[in-house]
Image (cartoon, rainbow, N blue to C red):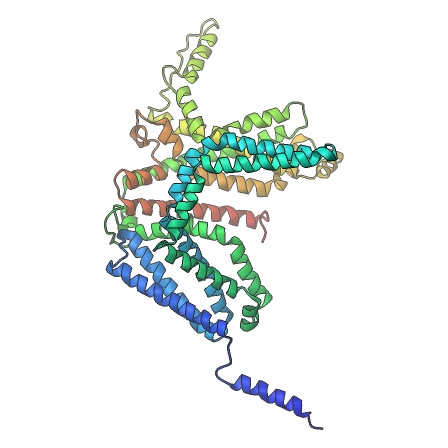
Length: 531
């Protein structure tokens, strides 16, 4: 039995569409491909201008990084043109990411050209003038809330009064801080080139983003639900991603390149390959810094973790006044490293410090025993090579043990009480419950605390930098407190050897990364961390 005529025509049309090398494409899709082509060509032109120094003058390492970024953008944009023509989802994804970055970069340059950032500084400096008018707005807001609970005949009058107060306060606030003149200046500058050009590019990029995310694009590219989730996820985390690229990821890549160069931070960078890393192998100061930080970590990390666990177990008891003790132990973490270090610097003073004074008083008390004539020890805490690093350990432990205690305390709050009750029924004592219940259940928390404390310890900088100043250098006596981060700082900002400093930073990064991997591997084998 033959098919109906209409069915035959439909099948012929479908077969013709499939066999046709070029399918009919909507006009917006052609426009998208043309825009991506312009994107790629524009990136290539900008790359040539940077390389030749025509119109865009960038020198040193930033020039090489900018060349690489523009080259990558041009390559991806041209690749997206090919994928868009083939109706491949990859082209849609590349177009979305590139235009998202373009919108952010063009928007930033727009704000930079109209001098918005300096205007924000001026607004912050003048904000104090508007505080009285802000108080007037607050009074109006309070009156509006109070108006809902009064008599109906008074409610309307109070609402009008509150709105009037808030309007007058807002207008006076804008005038007092200079925001209205600033807005006029902003509007007059944004219509002038090159700000208007950057603004137009940003607007076009935003329109392309809306087009790429539209339902028409989903139908044309045949995107699956998982592919749409990827695009939505990128859009959702884009502020964090852009911030990461601008302030962490980008500088990280730049520092990797700088570590392969001989650069003073100002002039042209000379590529020397692994020369900086080879020099580190024979650098006695770098070796000393590694030995110092190894000793510091071996001593400070256990003293910051194990007592914190014991302290958290004590603070977890339901006794009167425990909340006060929890706040007191957490106080050093709130005070900050600088404040804590300055206090300990006074305590360590060899002549007027309270530590040596306490040792003197204790010795005199012990000498009251007949037959004893002890001499009070008066250590030179910071100026003696044998005690300098130990002094840093004490300050570090004092600064971190409170925060670690809070983390352990949070973990203890999540231990089911039924486990302790069952252990008590089995006759387990305090130590038995701690060893067989608390420690295993807190294993993930312990891993986290150990990793974060290790990272902080290996990045030791603030304590020796503050405690040794100004009498001693951060290296301490006989380089006793020299650490990799301090050595990095000295090479980067005192000797202006940015390439060598970047190599030190990357070696330290690899050491920390390797230790973190060992932590995770060990705990995964023990079944603490499971995927």
